[in-house]
Length: 483
Ligand code: SF4
Image (tube, rainbow, N blue to C red; front, side):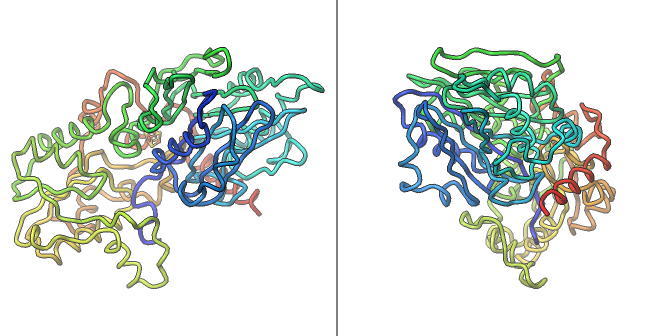
């Protein structure tokens, strides 16, 4: 794939709602639509009317999976939803979520954002692969392991009411790694954030109900008021009595993924009470102070580089302008049979504005470089369009270490900055100069008094992960289970 992994890829977005009298399936659809940037491989919704849990899911974007015909039978007062990009397990229907399991007389559904780092140990605990409960349509992701473990704990007696809440509190302390979960059975919705809080989850209030969502932008679209972020290590339950919480984990220092601020989260979301858009502008301002350059125009790589480019222009006094137009209707690029067609795929997404570029010294702002192939093509496009100089400025530090907590960039050997100096990367992408935002400035831009994971930038992992072994073992395991 020409542009595969040109950007870090987020693992998933989750949504949950308990709202008697509200069109919960439609509101979940809207919430997932707002979270579409977090995963484009599959989408799914589960709802319950108090009697049964019904799940509809499929491969594709939210608008491809759901139409009126598929939404209208989904009736009930509670529901959960999920959009997926796979970091473990292949992109198959079975791995799409919500995952569904039966337990005793009850059924439950689960949606997961993140990556576990002790999946193999958990398999050993269950003694089975992806099928702890007979008849389950289990997939091959770490999310399925969690669902299996909860199903085992959730086995109620004949006619016994759901034990989902207790089962979740029993299982989640055994999980390691990144996991933001939303689960539901016939009577309640349960949200979980791992004790490090790698992935976000927020709570919103409707007039007659409650909402959980990966990002605040999903609250806005369903008309929910932001109440608070679900705390790292909190299990929160939404049911007929309102909301209540458990704290079944040992305490840990919060480590929200700093890349949520850099790239993953939508700019109109808030994290740690701060606007993501404003934080990205601050990154651009600090980048301008840290690595100034003489130029005629500051331009973003659209769209994720826009706020940082605005910040760089404001701080430097260099005029801001558009140099590339993005085709908004191109999703993932599947045309790749020849090198020539692969090269054209960047042009399918980004086309240069020659009149704005020709004869100018450009500062080109992007938020990250993972493998560099897209940056290299963009620099070449700008030069072809007549740019006199191309100076690349990146609003995050070099990405040198793999992520084991829900972001997919591949192995360390595949990361450009892990294998080249900044000067070598500059030569590889063909820029006149290249510079990255320093880690101190990044933390200043996002608010350094709060806890962040920066492992992919610093190698400082908050959890002990046997780096290559764990990653390779997980990949091999998922591949083996898929066969
Ligand atoms: S390693 Fe990087 S991408 Fe992964 S959670 Fe930490 S900061 Fe985020």
